[in-house]
Length: 198
Length: 198
View (cartoon, rainbow over the protein chains, first blue to last red):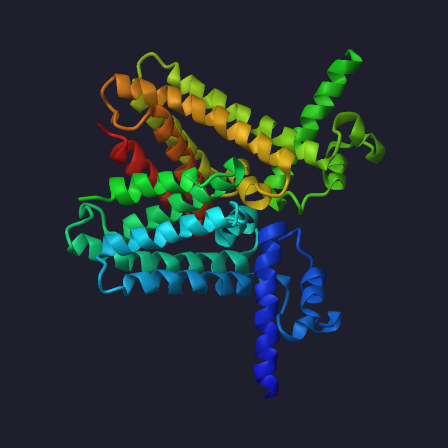
């Protein structure tokens, strides 16, 4: 295997482990040592991969959001579904996954917006970009639902997408302390089946 | 001053300092040392006040939410305002305070639900109780707005209050990464001026 390819694999492993550990212990509660140890990377070589813990945090955020955007995109590409149905299918999948995971973790973006959203500039910028990328993909589905006459048109697709992102983040926080998917189901019901409807 | 009174004062100071430090640095990022040092309490005497860091966290959460409930209650008692107007006055005050604080901190409950909501049992229970106490006070205003014909009645006051709590928490997270009160204004507009209206 070429050296750069192997380096990329190790880097991805470090990011995967970063997601898992920061999700469980928070950003401040996660030491670089823990991450390196779990991937079997020698202590001194961390800086071959990342410039600093903050840089690692910012990259972990980018790494985390991609699968969610892909998953949402898959639903939006299902030819048999309208925009509103695709969004419902996607969020229903998220609710089922949260139940399977026993309400653990929530969303790394929400957890980090709370913990370091206004203290680390690099992580804030990475969080902002990740939320915008996710919001933009939701906007696609919402705009289609508006065009198809399923969603209200007195607010722009971007305004509705922003509100959906925020309300969903709040519901994920609440899920963790209630140990229940009810807050997610309520968000789904109030917005996707309620406020957003034409 | 009586000894128990002085002990209570020191305990309150430790909790005030706990709110400020945990807000700025997160739960894991805040050492007991920092808190004791800032209040001038000798290292060994922390356990005269709290059983553990976790117990301190749980008490800090209780200590934090009280002024918000009082502030909301003040608006609900204003005889010239209906339920919907009282809620609008209260949330408008929160938005103005957030702008004055330059979007710093957000809400301690939201930050801690994200960081330790599913890892510390004692803190989760304290967060759950604090959120419920706050939700119950909001429910009072919402029920009044429903009785007065201002708010929709096809959802219970408790369901609407739960959704408002969650959506507002999400908006506060977003405020921090956007460095803007716009997410709060949008939550206000979408719920208090939108979805909740009869």
